Length: 113
Image (tube, rainbow, N blue to C red; front, side, top):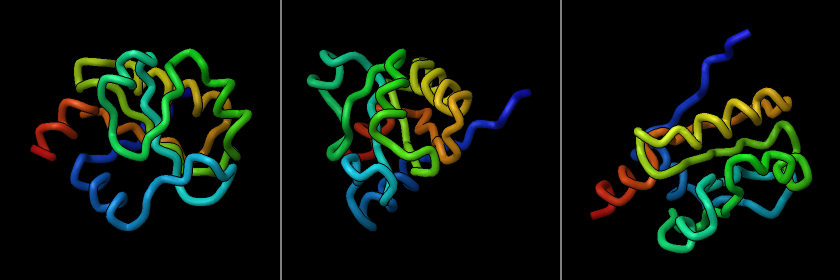
């Protein structure tokens, strides 16, 4: 069964963040914003307010978040497939509201410049 991945544009994400910062601590309230790259890449640059859970560590989402919480994942750029892989893995694990910011950090930086 192939499920279509929900995506968000940089403008949509910017508007969402203007409406309130991510809630990466509460299991079910608000939305989480997650950079799925490795710790070094996250340290180098990330969207303000996001947390780092590298792709391949999807069990951490199960420990931290309710399956109904909105989770927005992103990686480096459209040519990077890490956020898509993480999103599909989360959906396979039963998460209901996973959104891929597929344009990633490269788009975020150019939109914020």
